[in-house]
Image: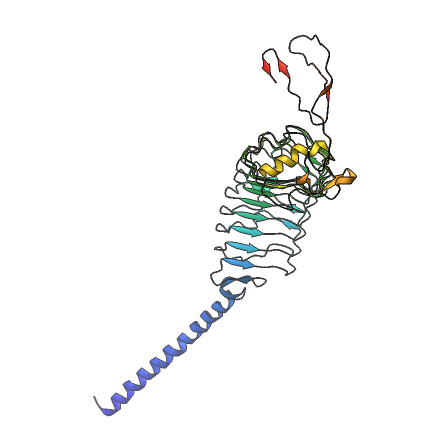
Length: 395
């Protein structure tokens, strides 16, 4: 080939190369723009209103003034924090693609409504926090299909009633916080039906008046917080069926009397807190069924340390480990005021002169038909414990 021919070929190749470069340039530019557009929501797909962990498993969107659940939450999120925003409603399918989500925090918003289906898709959800919102009803329909839910927090909402089967769609629940429902006016007898796995229940500061709610469906309950309500007395059957209960807190509830046999079903109880009430005496043998009790709080009660308190002082010394905060101090009689309840003793400087129990007025004979109710009244000294003897054995 001549020199001229070689130059021509070289130029042709150079032109082809330049053409290829110019043809590729627009394609590369277009790809760059597309990548920039995908990154707009935030680093690695994080919503712009939120901050995300490096693996996008935790997404935090607190204090951002959000009025709804933000779109674009990564599908592999396991922990989503939406607390302290201005969300008023949670629409259906708001989290439908978050199949791996385990913890959802919606506390301290302004939520008034949760639509049926709001939590669709949350098949892995373990913990749902809805405390400090404006819910007036338990959003039972929204709990459908939350088959792995273990913890539900509804405290401090203006909920007015808890109807029957309010939580039967989430039988997997182990912890239920209903504390500070100050607007609560009614709890149905069947409110807790279906919660066979529940271990912890908080009903403190719920404006409950009179009698205890029906807790018998909670056969596996281990901890019950029901302080700061208004119970004048605790009757037998108040804790019926709670044979697995280990901790019971009934503080600051204005209790003035606990009837005999009120704790008969609490055979597993380890801790009992009755502090800050109006108790002055307790019936003889009240704690006899509590074989495993090791922690008892009776302080800040106006205890009458007369003869009626002798059995209690002796029982405390024998069964409860020494604890200065356990038992409180005497309020009456005047000469005993300020003394530790546990120190009351029949031989205490000869001040207490206690007589043996006696029956002051025996009941009269009573004829009544079989299977009818018979009322036999027996007036006794305060320390007496009456045991009836029937033809077929003691009662």
